[in-house]
Image 1 (cartoon, helix red, strand yellow):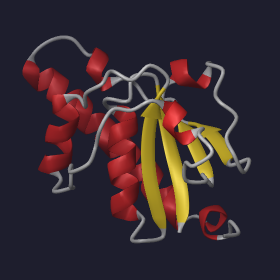
Image 2 (image 1 turned 120 degrees about the vertical axis):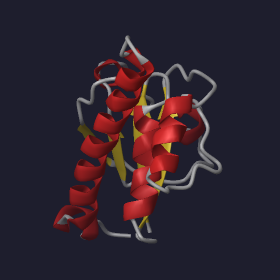
Image 3 (image 1 turned 180 degrees about the vertical axis):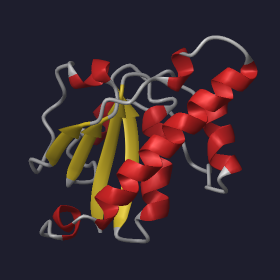
Length: 148
């Protein structure tokens, strides 16, 4: 099984959605994790709502620091994706095992202002974007060929 860490600043929306989506698409081949440089401490309620609307499990999802994954006893990551521009520009910890890293610039649905419907639509749009990217990643030869 390959471990994948999704990073964002607050770890309350995009990275949480990505973690849940990879665990869904990964079909036992991947274990998704998420973390933030400055975690909010709680998962955004609309992220949980979007996951539930798509019948994805939300048990165990929590906002956490990326320091948990830089510790010696942390799972070794094979891939690390930043999903927000702020996290991509921050100085990240040194990740054990030199995982493959990439950046996906995903708009922050939690930053959307306006009606509740507009906010829900922003989360749905981000869910769909991440769903497509993660589905493609999980099926890619690069993801399949990483040595265990």
